[in-house]
Image: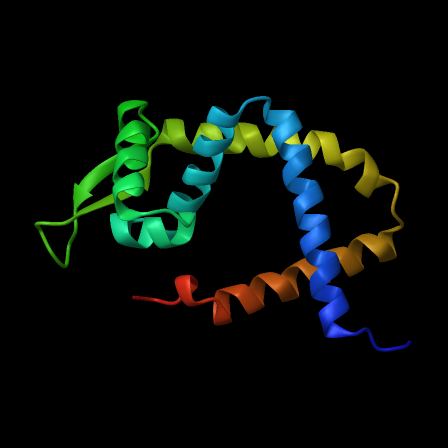
Length: 149
């Protein structure tokens, strides 16, 4: 098997990621729900998460992060607790309602995409799974926001 150019792989990954994001937007139906979905996914990844770390993960300003987390808290999707390391600071975690909301959106996307993946051979699905695992491991190990604070 011939080697693949890393730059072209990254380019293709960005294109595919953008297409998946657009498909998700169509599945979700409105921008407000997409904002909630993205925010809940960031909270899930880093929980318990402080406002500053959430802002880094969501790619927004700290004031915007504070406002969004307050909205999620008002909707019952996240809960605020005092930080164990600094009782003056708040940290946020998903509530059961937040987990259900996130799972519901992910299920809707999976249902839309499943027929395509079902049409792949077992060998192709294993290759996709392996590639996703490698990218995920890289991001967990190398992405600055994903490192422990």
